[in-house]
Length: 145
Image 1 (tube, rainbow, N blue to C red):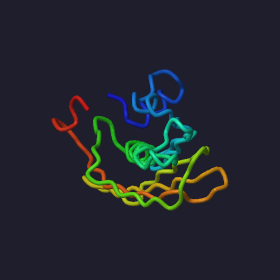
Image 2: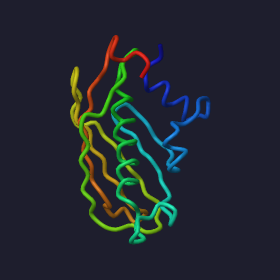
Image 3: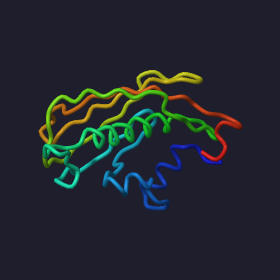
Image 4: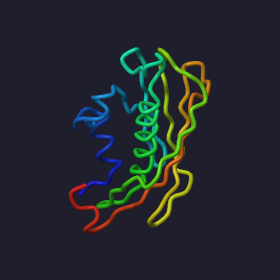
């Protein structure tokens, strides 16, 4: 079985399909290295909430994808993970913008890790900040995930 980082890089090269949620929402993984991942996303009116700004759930999705990919990139062969908790602070409204979600592992552990993400617009202005707690799964827990 390949390491998660290898599988992630295969998807980036087009050798494997992207995660279905990436296609549904329209985000792209553009960078990955152990403990760090960057997601690009073009926010448009199709992602708007009833007030016309970017729906907060979409911001959660891109932050979760960046954090999850960053965490997954540190896992050993045969390991997977699950998110235990996610928190996000929305710092400014977004209408139409190109966003970058940069996920970083703050503290990895044998079982639990802390990950963070800054979501920025094209002016490098902070739109949202998220944190997540992830749990590494092994053996029977990791099968089929």
